[in-house]
Image (cartoon, rainbow, N blue to C red):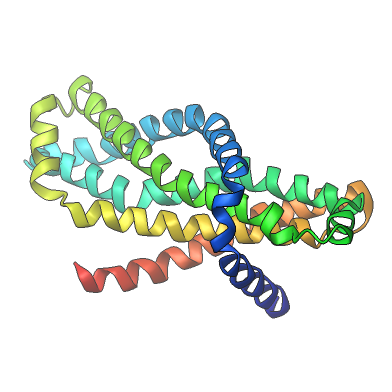
Length: 247
């Protein structure tokens, strides 16, 4: 386990060293960026609207019974932008995009395409890893912003339509507006950027270290997704603990 962590940190460091060459890879970055958007946008919208709705559905009736319906918007707003938005989108990206990265790079490793790149004096990290890491670090924060907005709307719709809550649209968003500040949104964006680095690093690392033919590719994909999710959830706690110091 510790060897894998060391290898992933080394891969991340080597990728950061190639950042000055990112402009020369801009076409590949754009391709990866739009591929991530096409793969994730619809699913992100569906997940977010129901996550926001479930938050309101679970907390709304209890708070309304106690005369606290005015804080429903605040609870949904903070939950979406600080926790559920970044974490759920990172898990979605790990499942849909990270798995594809691991499979694509893993197949190139198994069929010796990466060896061919090295023979031609092409750095595989600069050619394969850098565009994917850059694209995912750009795409995930934007996806989180989209998720947060859709989740807020989903929560507001449930608050308006559920007779046990019966909170107006304006009442929901007034509560949200009075509680959620810019730093809360920035917190979610910081988390999403870190989670993007995790998904990109873990997925590319698993792909580059694939062995054993098609079965090995399957193992790499499974490890990429499960390891990414585990690291995301562990890091979420420590990031939250650290960022609370700035509230």
